[in-house]
Image 1: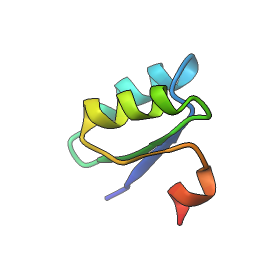
Image 2: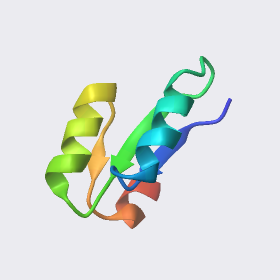
Image 3: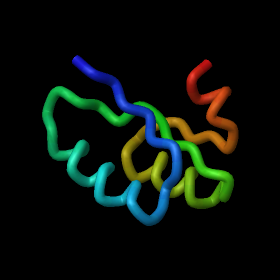
Length: 59
């Protein structure tokens, strides 16, 4: 099973995220964006943590 962390919460990330979210065995486990509010909104939407630093997300 793959675990996916999304870096970037706008633009093209929306298309990738929506497609991945439909897959049963691919949980979205974190969201990162330089705009903290964007990362927090996606994290809340998918029940996952959010970050503004991708190094912390990968941590």
